[in-house]
Image 1 (tube, rainbow, N blue to C red):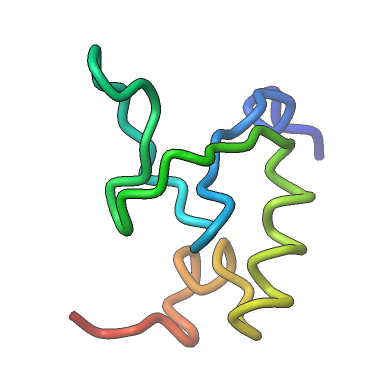
Image 2: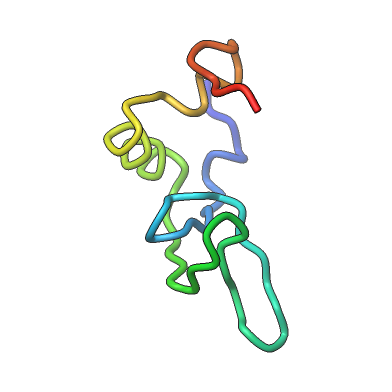
Length: 72
């Protein structure tokens, strides 16, 4: 099943791979998690592979099914 949202590029932090990217008039794009300004763009599937390799956790599946999700 193809979801049209899957084709929209995502912005992510090159340091921590967070998707929490904000735009500031003075700084430009930056990571809300770690403050890094080196922001990259890719598709969600490539980002998921990078995140899984780094964290050994399938982020999207953990959100969908609650498996492996870190508690606050």
